[in-house]
Amino acid sequence: MAENKIVGNRSELIFIYDIKNANPNGDPDENKPRIDEETERNIVTDVRLKRTIRDYLAKYKNQNIFIIEEKREDETQKSRARRLAEFITKVKSENKSKFEKWDINLEKLENMKDQDIEKAIKDKIKLKELEEILLTYFLDIRLFGATIAVKDSTITKIGPTQFKFGKSLHQVEPKFIKGTTVLPSREGAKQGTFTEMWILPYSLICFYGIINENAAKDTGLTEDDVKLLLEGMWNGTKNLITRSKAGQMPRFLLRIIYKEDNYHIGDLDQKIKLLDEENKEIDKDGKSGKEIRNISEIKIDVSRLLSTLERYKDKIEKIEYEVNQDVRFIANGKEMKGENIENVLKQITETVERLGFE
Image (tube, rainbow, N blue to C red; front, side, top):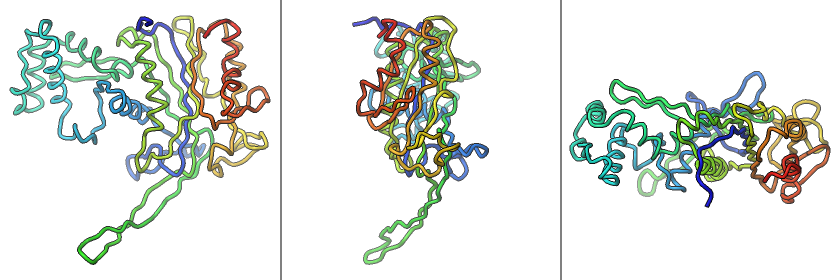
């Protein structure tokens, strides 16, 4: 088995997924899909994507996650201070020889207020020891960093993995849906209740991210952690089955790993565009993006992306990828269907394959 090494090379990430008749990321006021009013494109925050990743890794991969979804039933009534106390108690019990000096007992903390719990933790544990524990046990802190206040001290870690806001690759038009839900109020009687929600008929969303090798050294981010990150992006998106998110499907995931320290090409997401059935650019000389309802109606043109990788091929060490079968790509004027994955991936990775990389 290969050694689980700390990430030593910078990476760029592109992640494309779509959603149908749902809301990928509502605003805090009306829960309306976030829209850039000037470009009429859908916006999804990096916080939403990180939430998707965290939830998947906690639920399906049994990973310790520090920043949890507050609505999770098993944690609803627990403050972060109390969860931290529980975790430290668990760490102490599993590592008695190393941490026996910690006089921390969860039973003693159960009736304390949050500020008293934090004081008890700080009084018994050095901040550096607490930082080491958090980075060792919580995957999301190694990935995304965190700022953790303990009494009058703060632990701040900058996350190696950072995403820009995701944006749809085309214009969208939100729709306001009204309906009724019939609920029984008493025996023999029924009562109707109105339901209202905002949706997007369709949105193909592109995220761009960077994994910074310098911050990775500080949080201890490993290559195995990055594998879990990529799995969380792909499978987490597909498994986000809620009333407002059902219908999301991952379409394309690309990781470019570089050779040189402190180097990346940048803006790879700007080198992708959408074409319609006649190979005209969506929202320009081709079909309006507001009319799109399915992935089958569009093609993803990655020609500029491939030519950019060709130009900087000597700086690339490796390319990793995942492609959905239903995607059609345009690469250097040629159309390839996703069901023939080998051909698609060959076009995407041929630059690096010629150099003998995996």
